[in-house]
Length: 212
Image (cartoon, rainbow, N blue to C red; front, side, top):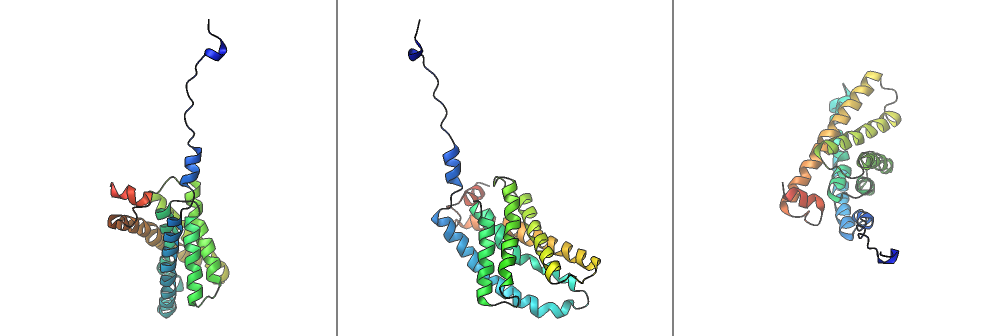
């Protein structure tokens, strides 16, 4: 008969909790790459703002139609999340891009920073809802659409409250579609293209695409 001290028990499996926490902790390379993307798109934002302003007259007959151009402003948030794959990446990349564009000078002043905060938070919530575990095309498109819907809501609230309901719905639809295609599909395709060059090798996004 054996005593309790003689009994052997199977070793417990090692906990994966510390590894999971480490996987979500930002590394230096994450900060550097997200910041580089944000700065690059901040310059794009500034240039796109000039184009938006200069082409507004072409949409004078039906201003809501210009919403199809909007998606470029929502691209860095989705792209940052797909590349970095860490909590906060969408919010950080979109917000810093907005700050850079504000520093360069825009027709909308510092309000673009508030826009960047909301437009980064919207796709961030989509990725967070899926526990930062889905990076498929469908998720990217939904995240892009969410960013577009948030931008449309802000625009209608602050710039176009006197538009008719039909104009507001048309603008919201075009803007959301533009963001789903340009920010959602566009970011997903851009990650695949970047992965093929090897520049995303330090990231799971690059290694995943390399095996496709």
